[in-house]
Amino acid sequence: MSTLGVTRRAWSATVVMAAVALAGCGDTGDAVATSSATPEATHAQSTVFQFDSEELAGNLLGASTEITVGVLLPDAYFTSDDPLPVLYFLPGYSASSTAADMPDVLGEALNETEPMIVVTVTGANELGGSWYTDSEAIGNWEQAVVTEIVPYVDTHYRTRASAESRGLAGHSMGGYGALTIGMRHADVFGSVLVMAPAVAGEDGLGDLALLGSASDAPPVLLAMEALEGLEGEALLSALSASAARFALSYGTAFAPSPEPPYFQYPYSLVDGEVVRDDTVWEQWEAGIGDIDVDIAQHREALLSLETLGLDCGSNDEFTWIVEGCDFIDAELTAQGVPHTYTVHDGTHTSLFRERMTDAVLPFFAEAFAGRS
Image 1 (cartoon, rainbow, N blue to C red):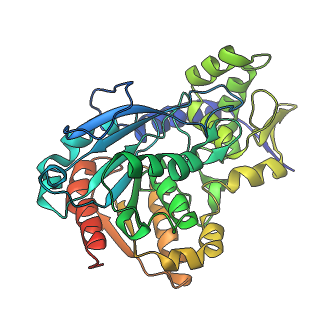
Image 2: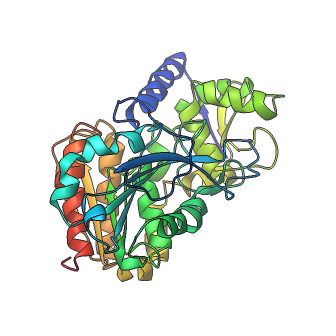
């Protein structure tokens, strides 16, 4: 175990950083518009609905089993009987309205490229984010995407139901999800594009103020004190309202525990000092901190992809994400995995719409047309 003293200044600085983190990885900023109906394929370009997932049922926190899904159909869907390829998009942390915003984000660009269906799978939950991973605390989000939503779309819409005709993209937390789901399920998604992924660099979580630094632990520990003795709806409500919600969402995704609050935190206070539990720390590190291990483990699957791309803003205010992109690029190169790496001059979200129309759609249009 390692021990570090904590100053008053570190406590307040961490609270500020946590607030910045919560505000930075989220929405396109537009209003939420969803429907509770489960649709059949109809002549409506855009449909947003709540998908009730069996893979999320029984999660220990009692979090919702509904996933907000948006399906955007190009004009070509209605002017031809040809089946179309499908691009699946995973939004970032707290991005609850992206599915409803997608028609406005893509605009007419969707009808000016290779015809494709765009399906947005929202990863936001009561804690802001599921990290698109399987966890007994919040449910099996990865499995929900792969084994439930993909088959649902293939059943209810006229699709080309093969890996080479399915693409997977994501931004921020969704970028992490696209990379990890893509490499683990290359038999389902043949092309992958990762945008500003929430992935740590070579040093892992150790220097990451959002999650890994011992000096940033006190606000989270304070938040966890408020959870003591709570269960059921009271616990879920407290987690949802916590100022440390970002870190707590990470814990429920990557370090679940069978006992309330249903996750483990790697730090505790002992005689006024922060002490790290190295065993729990390994679980936290294995989330977004060990991407090199994941890439090496899934090298053959990555090599089987039709095309793989990485997209990052050089002015991203989350500098650790830029470092993470550089690290992913270096590791893919070291493993001999063909990929593209594009760096633009935007921040984390400033060019989101432009990148979707000018980078994402062309990337998958070429992949689906076999020109990648």
